[in-house]
Amino acid sequence: MLNYFEHLANIYIFSFYKNYAYFFSCVLILFLLTKTAKYTGLLDIPNDRSSHKNPTPSGGGLAIVIIILAANTKLVKICPELFFGGLLIAVVGLIDDIRTLPVLPRLLVQVVTVGLAVIYLPSTAPIVGIPIDVIKIILFFSGVWFINIYNFMDGIDGLAGGYANVAAIGFLFCLRTTIRVEPWNLEIYSQLVYITMPFLIFNWSPAKIFMGDTGSTFLGFLFFGLGIRGLQFGNYFIYAFIIIMSFFWIDASLTLGRRFLRKQQIFKAHKEHAFHKAAAIFGHWRVSCFIICTTLFWLNPMARLAVKNPSYAVFVTILAVLPVMVMILAFKPGCPIDQPGYLLRFLIARFKK
Image (tube, rainbow, N blue to C red; front, side):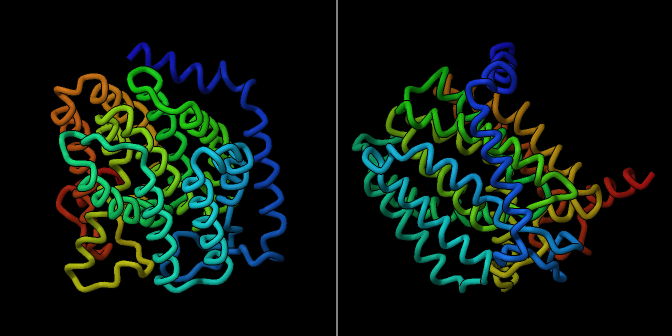
């Protein structure tokens, strides 16, 4: 843990002077977006499925997209499927933020971009003992699903931006100390940390701007794209991804799975995620803070432990993820908000005291 705290101090304190340009560029773009939202159509009007009450600027993820792509134009030559895939995903997300798009065109773009990223994955060796062709099929469906997961989980103030910040820190910790990757991979994770810092300030409850599909789908694709590139150098990086992203994939998968079994539309906006129910009781900032801190101080160190000790990786992954799953199940994800479980009723009673 001492190495991890040194890692945090280095990122949050000692390395800031090297990356201040990303921080202040994001502040400037976010400020401009908040001031021009009513003219650009990037204004989120609340409805009965919203978690906010007042019209709020949206599309704040555009700041993340602009800075990441501008800082990594070299990817046009060395990894064009990631650069242009992210750009296309972000453009479609921006259009959806301005005027709602049907599910089919959005899904089609995700299928194409993820498909190209998987096809051009520079690896032929088996991953965790599974033939690479089988792995690519699994990665294709997982990639499309993960983009939508990140979008679904952008539902309360501070969550999607804060999670991106601590997840990037976790991946940096795993990669810098255990797995060799392409230098640009590490650079993008580092950039994400300093770009999402100011976004989190603007997006913290009560939010001054929302990320929107522009940012959430872009981040989902970016984390997926960087993750699969990491697999070619260290098969066990897959465990780090499962652990660090566990709050998102568990909540979204359980919620959407249960809604599917109840014959509900899984792509229709709703408030049945565990984080929605928790925020309705404890408030946005408490829930976001809890998830961010749990990821920062529990999931990230456990992810590093898994990739550094491959023979125990499965055990460590289960140990890390199990408490997260229990906490999420306590809120009965995928069920109407008026159907709390026993543990949730207990928590409500304790909190009200």
